[in-house]
Image (cartoon, rainbow, N blue to C red; front, side, top):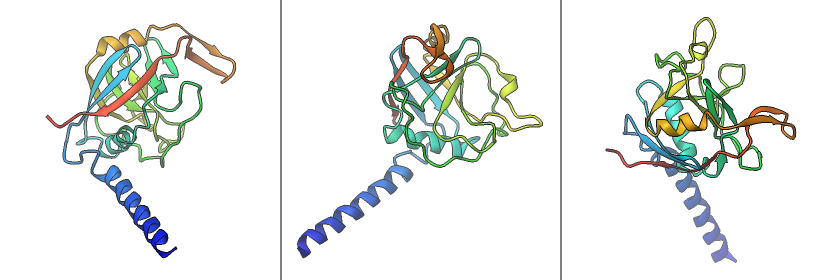
Length: 198
């Protein structure tokens, strides 16, 4: 019985150490401009993230990447000439678990311009957690001014044509979810991978 107890404690502390490693080391903290490969049902996108201007947001995003939390999710909201949003739901529109909300870094100087990636949030400023979006236009209305904006934390370096194609897919009102702008044919994020430092 004692041996079983010791084995259990060993496994428990191993899991704790692995969780800490995943959170702190696997996100490649010394890489100032990490790159992430997003394999979607419409092609591959590679984004370069800016840890100088958005360190909290980048680390938050990468934590979801390295733990596989973005794998097999959908882009659930697509509006032409505006945004392509995803990261929060599986293909059955079941919400994925979210970590704690993060501080809004929208005042970092990065703008919601075409080809950038930013964090989605609720109306309150510090409510971003796992959902993100791509700007498919210069969305000045999303930048901070007298109010908090949406924090940009990187940009597309490969696959701009994939996002452009996504932005043109047919969408409709989803009565089951009571959402507008939902793709009629699911657009999937199959896998997100943190690429080795260059």
